[in-house]
Length: 280
Image (cartoon, rainbow, N blue to C red; front, side, top):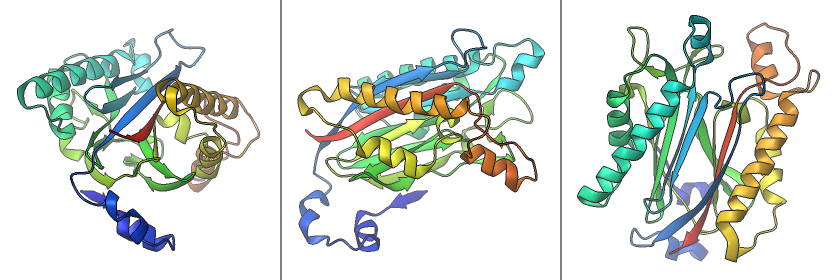
């Protein structure tokens, strides 16, 4: 399990922890105001391969990215991710009704075991409890936490090789939730979480994402609407870069590391969820 400790983070950034002592007790309660934006790849079926959810009352968000190679076998690459997300939402509602607490790993496990269609998908699920986010991640979807416009945490990519992410699915060579990375991170009021599929992270560098978030003008009365607007802004920027044949992108950089020359962006479905951390 990865943990991001706020004291260590502030010390690393040269900031004093004295001013945030009130944020460090486990009883401090926050909430998320989240919004999303999805751009399916234009030359694919309208639903695309990505799926996502926002459970506002349960303070839980998630994304899934169906693996495109299934289309070569005549299988809808997005059906698995859509079923996985629907089953995750059902599990979240059940957990809320039974004990009023969400456990992302249990959600992932239940969603996985109840998804029976052919296919495979990456997945990332995150919930907020008091001042701490709890998350699970499989593959190359993921999230970042931004504070004052700077990324202070980014989930790690899980992959078996170049462009070959860990992926949940029903098959001998596919993965199950036991491979999931569990993450716990402390957050503060004013932090911004950006969760996305690899359509974002393959095309947008950290410093570009920081600028997109830092340049925002926030209306605190309409944060859910603003979160959606910011998600749209980020997704459209990623789309613009993905269509370039010449720009250097994170994916082009990874290609270079793998001794493959491929400048420009990577066309893909792009899902972005933006969540602002607010006082409850």
